[in-house]
Length: 309
Image 1 (spheres, rainbow, N blue to C red):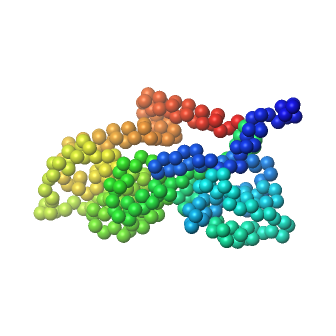
Image 2 (image 1 turned 120 degrees about the vertical axis):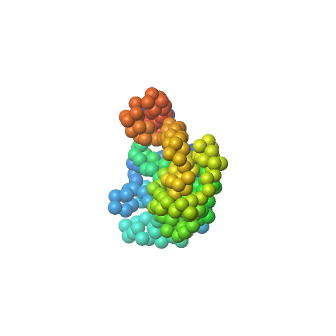
Image 3 (image 1 turned 30 degrees about the horizontal axis):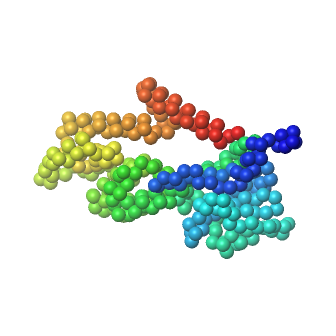
């Protein structure tokens, strides 16, 4: 009877799954949350926007505000399935009243990226329902690790991290400490961190070559380390730094530059985005890139089919 009434079992199932935030992925450095909110009755909140983000520093909680019907509802992102506040309204209700009510609960208007989150909101169909898909990634722990590494001028603490942090979350923080850095060792560590983040460092790539009397003694162990063991970030920073300029022979520099190219290519094949790989393939025509592109496209199609119905 339900099917004849125009309501499929899929739609009934979806009604129990929408308007809820769910944790869909957890790793050591990132948590990912997703929610599908029925958008049929959502009203604009501010300048045509149908959602706003709020943050409670005390509760360490990001939340999203929606305006369905005559109510405002604040949904917690970090505490799935929790509605923090439901505010009934009338014709006299103004947005500033909503702000004050939420402020009393400790929540203030924010941009997710300013508090360590990335967000993506799209219009999607979910099992026949028109929804607003909200996808949020929590990078606060990873951002804190990078900030500590920058503050302590210690690149070793982020050397083994593979999860990529969005550049904008620490770029200004890095710039601040680049201005403060005075010792060559500090600048070297910040250059390594910038390379790891794929952020262009504001520090000069090299210093003037010292005079013959100041030239340091050659350390063959250093060269062997960069030739055989150093990570891409370490090798990149070393080759762009002052020491390589006056300790390497032409042949050694060429050998390290070749290794850097190999490491860069390996990282691109393993971690590069679909867009990066396509751009590289157009230049080099390498079949390995084509194979990797096909894998990522298949994954993207599978993900799209699982979310858009």
